[in-house]
Length: 434
Image (cartoon, rainbow, N blue to C red; front, top):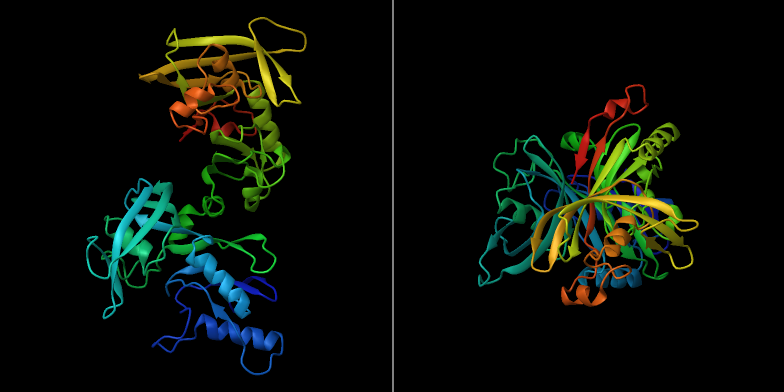
């Protein structure tokens, strides 16, 4: 039985099993189209032939999320999305070697006689451009779990592009000479984003790989499929690398949040927040006791949080412990900073160290001693060194001159100092960083 992820009168979204062909091939093995037409015919007692449109493909050994069209109108509209690259497919793969992440651009030529493809020179007759971007999720034992976004759809593209850089996919019997017969290729279509062909609603479907080599990365896979890099996870906490533009908590507004993306881990709750456009490490509790322990540790400052940022100018002195007072304006969603206490204000303490300077900017490491709203952004702006890309507290003309529209602030390191009798005492002395 092929697992069904979603179906209505227009769509059928399923999880393709590995090693099952999408459509009939010379092997004569049961294929996806035939099996799913039979499923529809039986379930809905359809007389005669059943229509099911194939709008995209997965290689035979690859598993994961696929969408089929149940009407010709849906097929035309979905095909347009895939051809125009508005439909988004995310893959997980385990590659051999230490994959650094980035963008891969090649020209790929298919050999019709062998069924293989290869990366060739740009001017090779028949070659087509191929582009993908990827990021590493974790490294272990000479392998890297990567998340991949395809920007073109060439034959065996992912497999060929990584193999051509001496990073073949684990278990790839065609392009990895070290693959052992019987190993299953570690490539999985984990997320599919489309627009419904008639409702015009954005839809996302997720499928997670299990077993085999995937077991080595089991606790990271749900986050990776949701576009979140999970740095660490156990039965109590998650440490996640939040991307830019994503609110931390569901309570921060409508739409998606880091918490909602990590719902497959049991709806964890954030113990602190990062601004939507700040990237980096966030601590989340997976149960009430762990969340309470994290919250208490942050208040007692037994969890140290460090950031990296790029600021305007060259701070003097090159390192300092800053103390100021802030007053929050809820209506304007910003804070005002004062050198002395004013009624209703709260103390904020920030430590910075200059790491390097280049021209009219400097890179700083910042430790957040207190945890006020927009603290780092407002405090550094107050001393005349706003964060590059921060239009709320910074210098918009300076940002435009540097062509930077996103604030250059990232939470890069968390250090734990727990008491042994604390519920999270086993994390004492641990350091996590990106």
